[in-house]
Length: 98
Ligand code: HEC
Image (cartoon, rainbow, N blue to C red; front, top):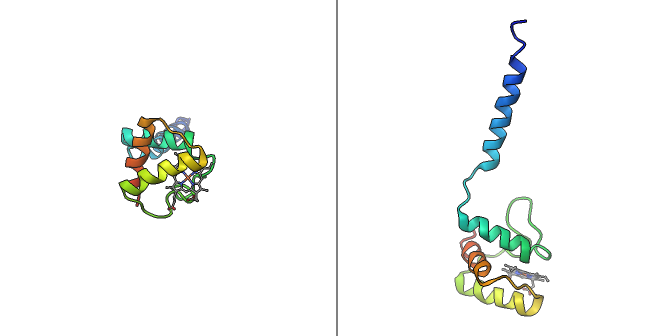
């Protein structure tokens, strides 16, 4: 029958559309590194929030100096020890957080 191919094509189009949705917005490498470092070192205490961000961590803005001091405190008081590279990625990412 003439329309037998239509449902398959539609399903294909839906798949492509959802793949595009999942890929957007394009994440710069630093952001990916920061998110991976946060997942590894911080999420056991700072749960990711449904609307983006993390509990407590992203509730107030902090500049680079504050974020550096906070990370030192997270290590001293909460045993969060990201590597130096992870720490740089986290600081750059979080002090640009709005
Ligand atoms: C063992 C639990 C624990 C871990 C691990 C942890 N934190 Fe925290 N963090 C807390 C708690 C509790 C607070 C709130 C109380 C305080 O400031 O001491 C906090 C506060 C913060 C704040 C301050 C928020 C504000 O505006 O006052 C930031 C930023 C933060 N954490 C970032 C991080 C990052 C980044 C990591 C991972 C490298 C991390 N934390 C790992 C428990 C943790």
